[in-house]
Image (cartoon, rainbow, N blue to C red; front, side):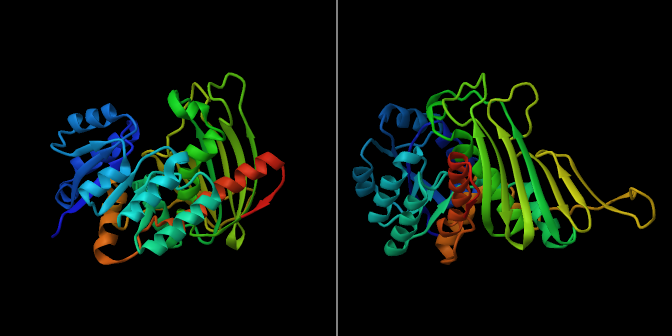
Length: 343
């Protein structure tokens, strides 16, 4: 099988997760050869190459020049959101398929432009929504899809993590909604398999926050088929962190599923009977339908590689992922206007 040549643009902390995922997976190692690294600080790219023993890769700060020299099949786009449009467009201009870090664009209009550019170039563009490629999310999707809760009625998520990143996040606008909540929004959309219709959101930057703007938010989404999705989140809540995957309560006409975002699952229906409250009856939650889809970054990259080779659309293709991005920007607009916003 032909090895796909890849250039990686943006060699900071996030890039290490991508390269580590490829290095740790024998199938990805056999499928992908990293032939170039690009960063505005070449020394950062050199450090990444040394850390992962990438050999004689081409290193530079000029993406155009590195792509021209290496002629890759794939561009891995791991730059900050403000730089994404130009990086992706450059990749398409050189005939690359592009896999981008999330969020897929710095605005909804920019997201639609990237979809147009991908279509014009005849190339794939997808987004690393790695948190839908984990065992817990896949188990819940299968359970809901197979009718374990009856008809779905609601998804409710809590995300409270005191994360001290330093760097660009602490200076971002709408940092929680734009940089982190999109993971939960995308997972909820995937689990429910419903269309987002509208949102009301309150955003704040609580006292004591070490972020410049928008470290906390509460949102109520209306999904199709009368399903409600609620989100409560903070990136500056110290002392009792939830999982990075959030803590979930999912309700249906038959029962409720609870997931702590880690290893604890519990699902119950209720026994027939009289009285104020019915007795809970445990339900079995199935394993993921396909274990290969549960390895985070590695599974996203493998899905992208398979799509290139088969001609099929990857699961996180940008023309689908823009629905998750639309949830984010609608929530931001609702918080700004203090109004319900349609999606």
